[in-house]
Length: 239
Image (cartoon, rainbow, N blue to C red):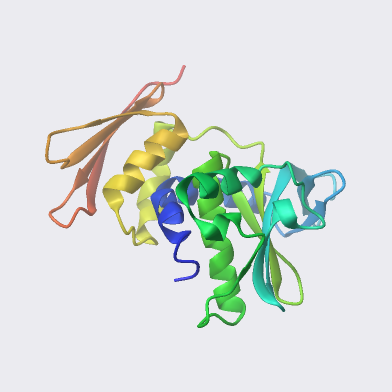
């Protein structure tokens, strides 16, 4: 557990986030060995192939927060010297104000008492990234090591294909194998919301969810412990 107040937001978006992070990883991996560079003045984060600098993945980067070991704290972008006080991160502040979440409205949030180490900071960055996707609808995010144990969390406007039902059903078996969803029904509902799909429940006991977009339909089945037990799909032929 990192920031307890932010974790439920990240958990709700977990399935959508995992699929969008998977797409970003695939796009970056297509470059082969590569590096990343952030240009705060231009507001970009660029992945560049090591063997051919002309091969790049250029994204519009929105700083959300930095998480630093000294002093051990999270600093929101709207209060950061390198951030934009009117930028995307203010949407998290607005939500925090409306829902009484002080972790989202305090400029600099200290680490919990038990927190320490690079691994905790890396996990906290993923929690912040997931919460930012949930509250803004933008994705994917990138957790960037920026020196001295500090990580910066960016939301990216990246040239990735939209997340369709057809794309999701191909990736989901692999993505789900590495996940432990805290609430699979909510995660599927939020996946549909964030992806812009239509969702209907199969029955009043919520034993299944049907998601649909122009690319096809997928039915998620849930077992007695509300875990995803199967996914069936009917995809639209692409001409």
